[in-house]
Image (cartoon, rainbow, N blue to C red; front, side):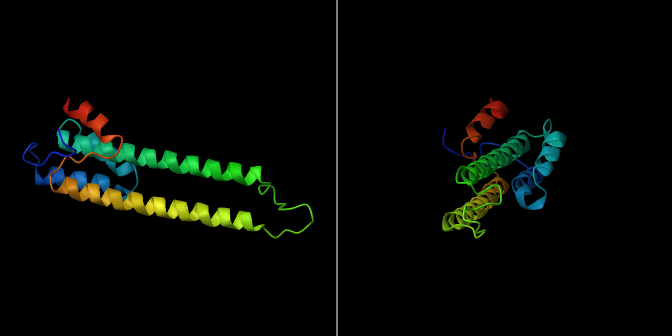
Length: 150
């Protein structure tokens, strides 16, 4: 079976496709709460909506975990190089060293690019869902597909 099934393989109504789109666009509309609500209200009514809402939920959880790990690595690096307690060096100079500035810009750049890519990917998957496709999100899509469709 290929990476996506089309509407010809899985019957879906316009309402189901719209709800699936909203689940994936929830990163822009309301966070993880929206796909949880849609999943809770539609899980027994539509496999299509259940599939896409579960993907949106677990995609957002995965993104949160990745960002949390990134923040923890950043904090560890700050403390490892002695930048965490307000003293940047032992000469009494409170100016931050160049490495600290580079680390800050790198960290915020990574978070910005990661968030931008995740939002773009969610929009892409949402539009595919709106077309009636069972596109599978990276890493978790196949697992959720097997749980929902057997």
